[in-house]
Image (tube, rainbow, N blue to C red):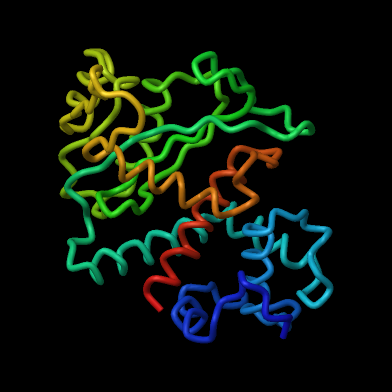
Amino acid sequence: MSKAYSSNLTLTQWELLEPLIPVAKTGGRPRVVEMWQVINAIFYVLTQGCTWRNLPGDFPNWQTVYTYFRNWRTDGTWVSIHDQLRAWVRVDNERAVSPSEAIIDSQSVKTAAMVSKDVGYDAGKKIKGRKRFLTVDTLGLVLRVLVSAASVDERNGGKQVLKRVKQMGNMVSRLSTIWVDGGYDGNPFMQWVMDIYRWIVQVVLRPHERKGFVLLPKRWVVERTLGWLTGCRRLNKDYELLAQTSETFIYLAMIRIMVRRLA
């Protein structure tokens, strides 16, 4: 066992998560690593923001930990675990598994110096880096994520992330309304969503006469979710060479939040 790092799963949390972890493959070398410690190591990287090579020595070998992280990113395991936990949290809150409403927002973040792929400049925020498009339900739980170059505008990014939401199938069968801010306003986007998915787009605008902080209906939910992500140092800046890896770390951040809630 590793030291008692703050990012470690408790026994109760691990017992909740363990059934969702893929079993070892048949044939070949048997699995000898303790999966509880592999997950703890991945959460350590997420929360502390260190590199894989700088994992503390009381965790399993960093190459082993990274291999599990990468393989489960590639085969969709992390997204599957995330979706199952999201369904459990919704049921625990006496909600249907499928939400009827969703909220979209984007966040531009700077990239590290060594990142060169999928990088652009957001003229509005004056940030060179990547943009995170999040769709969340009314509980603030993430449905789907898209990480793109920061130069991608809200409407194009919104279309791409909504395509991923639609691919969730029965998990969004009740979805009917999409709440957005002024960046998504306009007939081309709203009409496209209506024609393709039969969803209604509702725009929430900031009152011009109000100055300073304003709590906007529906939009505050996704803003809170973006705030949750800042609790993970790995997400305060985009250090990932691949945008898909950045998306996976966002799902991991939500997995950690939901496990702690349920346990």
